[in-house]
Image 1 (cartoon, rainbow, N blue to C red):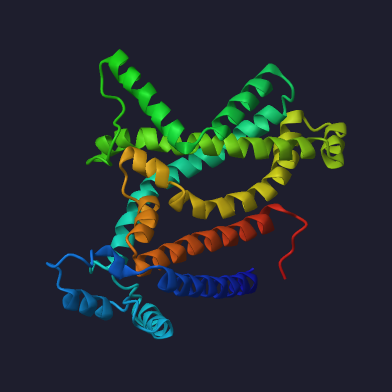
Image 2: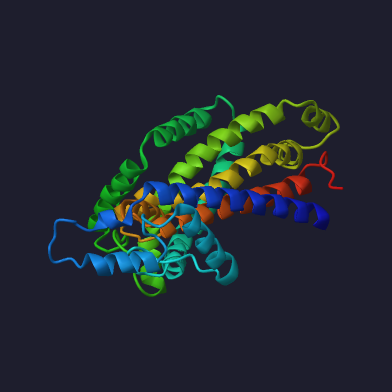
Length: 319
């Protein structure tokens, strides 16, 4: 297993290096940090602005290849991802934003994955029943709704619940302070993220379960006297989880940057919001750091998927 993991990590590291390098070159060509300031403003000291951008290695008049080699040396030797056009350290900003998003994304992702798999497997064993049709309809409605609509609808419902109970059960904006306050602020954004995930994952899981429930090995297990619950969990569900593991892996990266709308609605300043602001503020180094972080999440998820498949799939043998 260890040689296999070493090969996979080496391949993924090479892919991440190529993706990040291309992102830096593209951002350097397309983003102009000098556009943040009004050239017609006589109060601006353009000599100081140009000098700062030169020192930050992001001035558009500098050769792109020279900027790239300098940036690469800083990252590889000092793990320094550079500065924003305003002089802020990208390392510090990314650390803060990741911490904010982790609190939101991890719980939402776990609820979405576990809930989606459980609901999909449960409805598959009750194909065409009233419960199956009801949950299928509800899932399709949620999937077809934009994330912003879901977030706003949840806020409307939460306002009515607070008014009906007379207690401030739900909080609407910000992260809060203290354990109980943070938990209250987490309820709505976490529910907003997990609802869409449960709806989407349950549809995939249901279809995969229907394929495996009719497989020969499941029918054989039932014919040999294995009870239905054991046949479903040991054989059908285990097999259906293999392709779901791959789907989860590549959905991992989008959880951080894809949470931008949810973060905007609920006033969370995480990676999703930062990824949008980095581009709009002509932040070359910040944009590349977001790409590198997203790529790392994707490849880490892919590695976990490889490990999971090697464990649960008896057909896979690692040499």
